[in-house]
Image 1 (cartoon, rainbow, N blue to C red):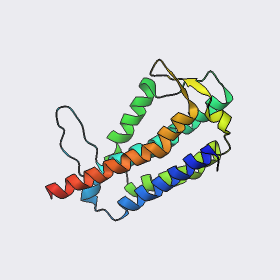
Image 2: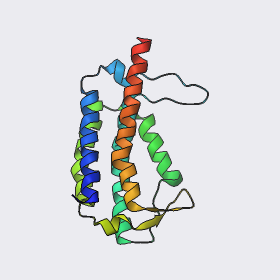
Image 3: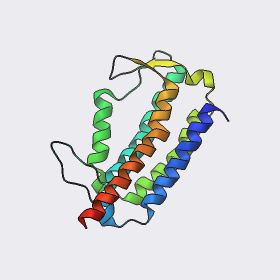
Length: 167
């Protein structure tokens, strides 16, 4: 199995696991979050799902552009961070089922866009928009997709444990 196939398969597995984890939750569980602590904002599960939905679509065009243009800078920078924050801030105005469906629809889009990458392409190094460093695109793909979902699954688990303590 190629490196990209391993990443995409793990991403799809993690996504399915995360969606199964939230499938039977109540609206109260989905919307609940810990109060802020020392300027640290906590996200609800709905906000986490909105963020994952946004991330899945945000990065695909950047990765595609980078493969066509080696001077492409990757990352969020200011405008990308605003897009991310808007997705999280507006999550309460959106139906969870729509966000979940969009996440499911993103999987074949991501696979079609990246699934044919070679191991050599995964090693290509690109400058970042928001930091003074160059990063292999394969590292970013792994971080943005399978690792990202895994990190947020753990966040969902912690949120559910906290919810159980408070209810």
